[in-house]
Length: 205
Image (cartoon, rainbow, N blue to C red):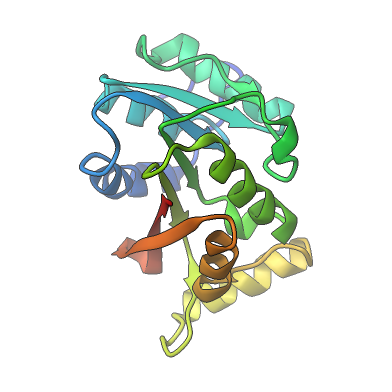
């Protein structure tokens, strides 16, 4: 994104590779106005990039990790556009405590596989609570699928995640969709992405 990150900010080479494909999915699908709630925003690089490209939307990044929140704020102070709001602490696994009451869309990039299943359960419950009817939940990351051969790189990634934390790992699209449906979120689109990733778009009933 920049030659040198500001003090206190994290950076990831993967963001530079996937930010444009992700934005390409979000741009035609997000509403014409309103608030986008980003869950598990991590370093904050996606938040800066997406907010700058979507000036008609208010973008609210959140994370449960204080160091991630500091990184988001460092990026925001360094290069954040006016529509990039201050980051908030939000634990996806505790939807009753989310500090946002309403959002027009919810986005989670590379969260589902790097968190316990309880976080995905909370994500679905929280998104169902804050979204209006027709509102979108957009997920991005690697997944496993029934009747679809998994790339060797994704299998290796899954193994490495589970070595780091047995509660992490690639999730099955079918399991995520079933969980979402139970909260009134229907899988509307499955979009293949570069490097064996998927974007999953859910719509609130």
